[in-house]
Image 1: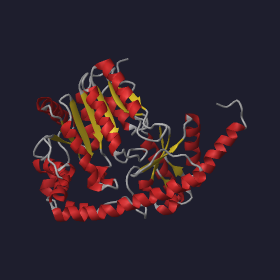
Image 2: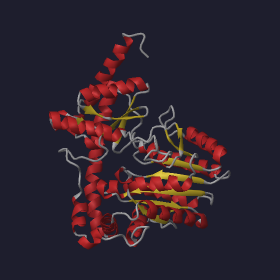
Image 3: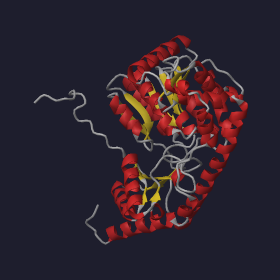
Image 4: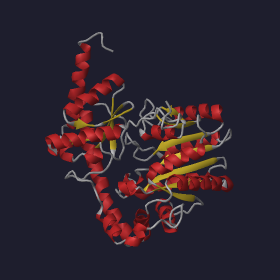
Length: 425
């Protein structure tokens, strides 16, 4: 029998752990009431009243965007000129430098990730990403029939595993003569880890050495950049990218959707930096062609409101002041959960800041059993490699008190039951 789908995609099936956990949380809230459910599944920011966070500074500015401006197409496949200028100002000029770069508007940060894989690698080649990472990285790679080579994210000392990153990159370079590697920083999803200046210096050394053997594309996923405690000061690290050799291309994947907590607007950008202007422009043209062939143009109203916020000093300061309160709230939520986890002996991966904390459970069978047991207690987390992701961005402080202990009790019960059953694995 002939198939409706092509032979290349006949076995595709979407299994998204984030949406699966989120649906479970929604159903439990409808059944038992929101007050009886810990929703640590949603990767979006909820306020202390359990409502999706919407910044007044963003949506009042959006209200002022003309209806025709919202309705019409963007002026360019690459994104409107003012939007691209705003992205450059937000990431670079705000901290005092203006690099030569190309900017392509994308539907969220996901569009930037997808376009980069599509235009960097051939089917069957490998993209490099951390073993503990955002699950859809795998989905995006599979969509382009690209394979995955993962590096161990953390060393035994709890720092970014530079040795694993380097050895994995060297292995892939030998195999295919080119490297595309993902790093998600700051506020890494799912662990909340942020790399140090010295770790970034070493990454630059690694890719410079690697580039002697072939092209290197570093994909820097900055989805949560505007929720790091350093604020704009973090962005000074981008100056490193202006000093790289010609065989290196850096692609910054920027999510305006997350910056503005306007997830449904689907606005992002792909920023290309390389001293090899000829090759950079070829990559830019390929990405622009992908934009035309896949999503056409990005939400025009979303681009316009970001440009208004970024380029109008008064509007920008209003937004930054409002956002600062919620960065503080994230830190307060994290402090509660991390301190209580330490007190009861619940293991966590290294956390610095951001939307997520991840409980470390090394044995997959125990992790899966804990995930299911917590659901019966109306506690919903996301099952990730090596543990369970806790979205502190969606849990109010009152529900975080005592949560680590409840999880530890559930984990201890599972471990105790397995000790009583010697034949279990």
